[in-house]
Figure (spheres, protein in one colour):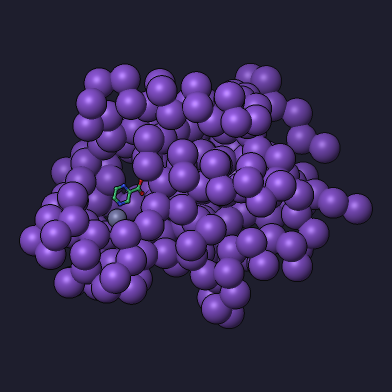
Length: 195
Ligand code: VGL
Ligand code: ZN
């Protein structure tokens, strides 16, 4: 039997207020995600958590030709998960962006602790549907959702547990519209039904 998994995207200090690449109200996803985590735990379903995990020098950073200020440098406090995020025992960490030539946003470019590609880990776990929340709606969440759909996974975006960067106003709303248009469903804590 196939099953669902929760995917918590990049809930790291640098994307929260006070961080190097802070998202307005980024930390507002934390209590909502904790409730989703409880629901998935109670249903016996797996929880994945991705982390943006960059070297000091990477083409992803402005200083080396990219578009972002330095953020989520591996092993720094900014790269740690938000201290309020209650990841369950057995949560699987997916690490991405750790190559100096990598400028990617998707969890599908990441690897699990055994070095398996995310998609491979999901297939091994017989997971066919992803519930996706976290940061940022218009970058990592968007790219992860679009890649998941392309790879044939069912996807539900957790509307009350995502926040965006909005470099241009409306980017997050547009990203949500695009994800829906490409086949994603949406839900909230009030509506979710796990099977
Ligand atoms: C992200 C910008 C730069 C994200 C990562 O996690 O959405 N955004 N690096
Ligand atoms: Zn990054």
